[in-house]
Image (tube, rainbow, N blue to C red; front, side):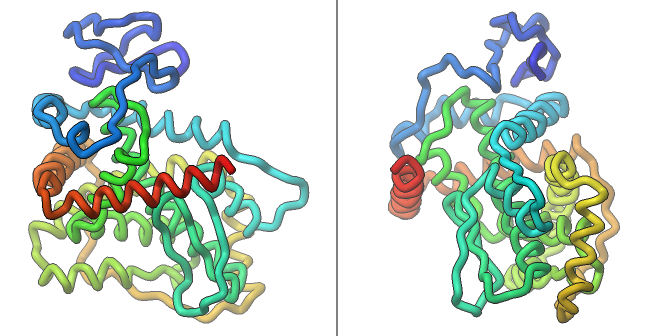
Length: 315
């Protein structure tokens, strides 16, 4: 990743020192050191003919997608802070803190929630449930990060509250939230005992969508490959020893089982080529749907929430 860069147009590998792709001549975008001053700060800057054609005219190559995942891994590696003698819960929290902000509440009505780069956990539940909740909500954040990095890569722009707001608003579209929930529950499946894995949110959205087979099939195809990517990110920090300690937390706490199996027959295999095609279709369709004056106020409001987050972080 330090000595090579992939073309966002054709996916060909180039030297980091090259400005243009050796195969197609496209300007190369360096994930690590953006020299562009391009930013999206307003609705007018977000919805442009140029941005739309950059989505419709380019192909998201597997090599480019892999580079995006590697960039997210390296971001976490640079931000994570470990301390001596950390409990399994504290280690999982440290991983989440490398990507988002983890805070606690005492409401007792939900395990946790995620929005605007903040993961909120109810500390009234035992340590095992808190670990499960952080992993679930962190997956939602990483799902957003992958989509955001794709747009940063294709549009050659910096991360801004407006860009993050666009992603956050996009995730409220039921067919996309369905994918995010699939990933979150599937990551639970990677790290938790089977009796604590719940697809309740995924199942609920499926019901809201009247179990539309086409929507669900696309969601699973995208979600299965993105789950593998998020698992790859998390596996950088969660080794076998920590995996075993997570399992033991449920035994130590004698945690009550909360499993809810997925409501569909999940037999699809991951397919990154098909995933990338469907993923770009999803982004393009969302871009078209959200380019609507009735939705603009929601995007602007979400932008204000992100601005408040950064104000608190810098204070």
